[in-house]
Length: 117
Image (tube, rainbow, N blue to C red; front, side, top):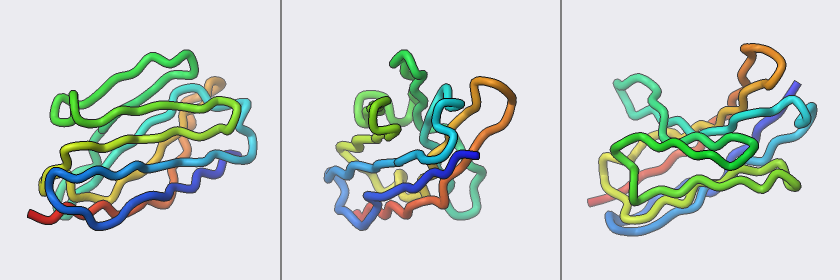
């Protein structure tokens, strides 16, 4: 089992920045790709960014050039640096860790990000 704990959410004005962190514990040796997803009220959960254990990244078009995902494998932590935030970035942000041995995935509890206009 893997446990994920997110932190760093909050309220920020449009144009501002936030940095989210997600610390993994437990069977961290089983983790392959990690990523961030978000869910706004009334909408489906959507991918924001992912990063493999080797550092390859993937971003949603809506955040390219504004968000940066990074990973510290020694600390089992993934980060999401969010710059030039927009009101439409308001959502609950979830950390996800995929298993390298199965189709299993682990999710954090979510952290609220609110961007005011």
